[in-house]
Image (cartoon, rainbow over all chains, first blue to last red; front, side):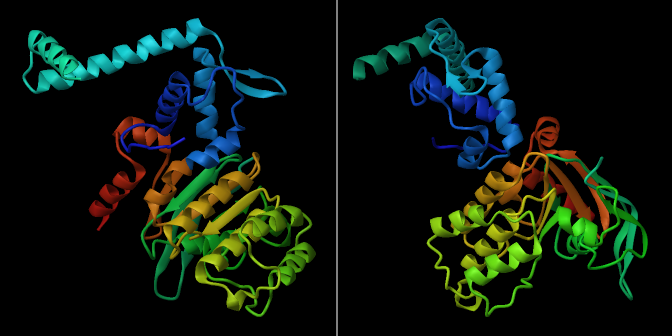
Length: 121
Length: 233
C-alpha cells in the first residue's frame, strides 16, 4: 500500500480512512489475512500503538475481524462492505458539492456539468 | 512504575545552565520524541539517564533506581557519537555485545545485518557513515531492554537510511519497553511517536501526545515546533 499522511489530522483517523479505501477497492481483498500490527506499522512508518488504534476502530465498524490466534482478517460480509462503501461515497459526494459550491456552481449547473462530462467520455 | 522520571532535575556546567528544574515522566510502552533545537539540553538529559553525568540537583530515576550498573541492564543506549573501537569488525562487535549484555539477541542482529548484506568481516572504519549508523542501531535495538535511549539516531544520514532506521526501531522494541528518540528532525520521526517532549534552553516547554496536538491544534508536531520555537527565540 502507498501511505500518505496529512499534517492536520491525527494519524490513526488517516489510517482508518486509507485502510477502509484499500478494503473497498479490493486492494485488501475480502477474507484475506492482514499482516501483524507491528509489520503494518513498519510498512506505513507509523507508531504500532497508532496502528493498533486504527485496527480497533475498523474492527468496531465490522470491516475487519480478529480470530484469537490466527490474526486479523478482512470481512467477507457484503452488507458491511456495501454499507461502508455507501457511507464513503456520500462523503465524497458531499465534499465534491462543497468544492463546486465554492466555485460558484449551483445544483442545476453541477448536474449539467456532470451530464456533459459523461457525454464527453 | 514509570520507566524514567525526572524531578526538578538541574544540571550546571561551569558557566551555563543545561537543564533547569526538569520534571517529566515516561511510562512503559511508548515511543517518545525528545525534541528541541541544538543545545537545548537533550543530550545532557540522556547522558544523566545513562550515568555519564550526574545532576547538579534534583533527581532522575530509571524504574525507580538511580543510574548505575543496575540501570544499565535495563537501558539500551545509542550515543550521539560512537564509542565503539573502529578497528572492530561486525563479528567482533556481536561478540562484544554478547559479552556485555545478557539480553542481546544475537540471532536477531545477525538476521538484520545479513538482510543489509553487511559482511561479517567488515570493520567499522571501512563502513560508510550510513552503514555505521545502521550497524550501531541494529546492535542497540537487538537488546531486549526496558528503555531505549536513542540520541540523534537519524542525524546526518540520507532519507533511505532514515526510513530504514525508523522501521528498525518500530519493528524491534518490545511492547513493555519505551523508546526515547532525541532529535531536531521532527518531520522525519513524528509519525512514529506516541508522545513528544519539547525542550528549550534546558526547560520542558511542552509534553503532549501527538494525537492530542493534531486534534487540538490541527497541525503537525513539526508545525507546532516551529511555532513554539519561533516565540521562544
